[in-house]
Structures are given as structure tokens and as C-alpha cells.
Image (cartoon, helix red, strand yellow):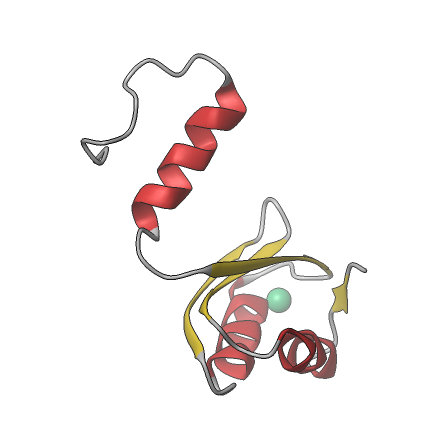
Length: 93
Ligand SMILES: [Cu+2]
């Protein structure tokens, strides 16, 4: 679903991806980190559970293919990075 205020004709593929992501997470600020080492559903659950426990963290979306962890809300960034690292995954600088 495309929010009505967004332009309809976006030709660049990366713009299209951004529109889709913004449509999924329309209201809250989102922190996105690049994380390596996540390979399966277990990793998704471990990272999601760890990050969700941080104060201020809302929905967590792990994208295995892209190696990203997106966190809604306003959690402490250092706490998010530490929580992911404690699960055994590497967070890009
Ligand atoms: Cu795994």
C-alpha cells in the first residue's frame, strides 16, 4: 500500500525500496544497522529478542538477505549495538 502523499512515479529502484520501507514503518524513527553473521531464523529470533528488551525499542525487523537490523523507536544506539554483539554477531561501524 502506498501512502497517498507519496509520488506515484518513482523510477529509480532504490527510491522504490525506500518507499516500501517507509510504508511499513510510517510513524516512528527507525535505526538501521548493518549486521554480519546472521544466517537463519534462529539468528533472527535471537537478535529480535535481545533488541526488543532495550528500553525505547519498538518493532524489530531483521533482513537476513541484506544483513540489516531495523529498530523502530528511540533506543540507545550503543545499547542496541551491544545487545546484538552479545548475541554473537558483528555490527558494522
Ligand atoms: Cu542462525
